[in-house]
Length: 346
Ligand code: 5GP
Image (cartoon, rainbow, N blue to C red; front, side):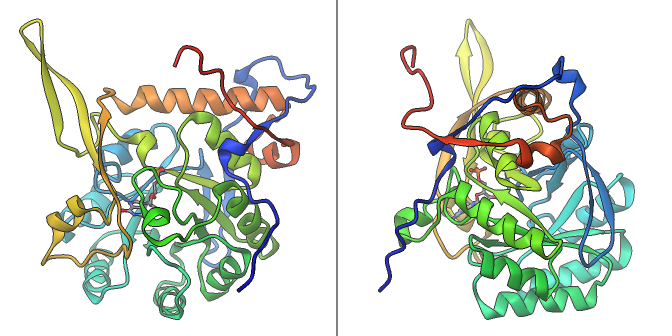
């Protein structure tokens, strides 16, 4: 048995120190990044935020709405092939990932969709990216699709980030256990503090000219700022994007002054009871660990939340004097803190 006693950090353990700058306003900063991907050689420019491939948020309407912000969406993998074919044929899909797990059924469905529609990005998603089988799977998908952007995960350490990049991934997804509806840490005791995971995996990936996507654990716009500061090239969000009109969750209505108004929406982990019941017998669940089912407040159109997130990140950039998102890690000094917020008013 080994005990690693280096301190590992989460978003809640740090703040970003302000720096002197000549920037005048939030409008002077650019949220877009341009990446040339390691294996596929493709280029992409946009706001590097990705809606998670979860039933409630990885939806086609979310994809359309986020594309307007230059942001991306990983569609959940439970859409039927026909719906995916029409979507990829009819929409501007430069900001959309097709998601698949390791089953043969997933593989066959992908082959059918790809034969008829232009899919150029895939998200290969398993709860535990540490198995040889997953590395082989990434290599197989790369061999069959030399020019498709492959994002693969999840892992939390530099060694495995390198292994996935060398197997053929362009982007490695980082995060085990930080998710808002994830119970992996509780059920298994396995995990890694997300800020440190991003710092370590980004360092490993950038050494090989690959990218990382920090996946899970962001609860407020400031957490995205910290993720970018830690070196995340992309940030994936589930819970922060749940509860909107473009999502696909059951809505709860309440009577207010004789009018029925939406107040809450369900949101659940992809290996929660809810997801398993929904797909039991059909698609095998791809998450080994458990997830939970919650109700989030109904928040109307997703545009408002996206504006808030983009506004928060822009403002962070003016505080540290970064004109471009790319400069953020270089201009980030994290300070360790004992407390983040003044909670006097709850
Ligand atoms: P959030 O932004 O909500 O904190 O985290 C979203 C991420 O949580 C997803 O992208 C995915 O990696 C992870 N996730 C989603 N569902 C489950 C689940 O049921 N169990 C676990 N362990 N993780 C999940």
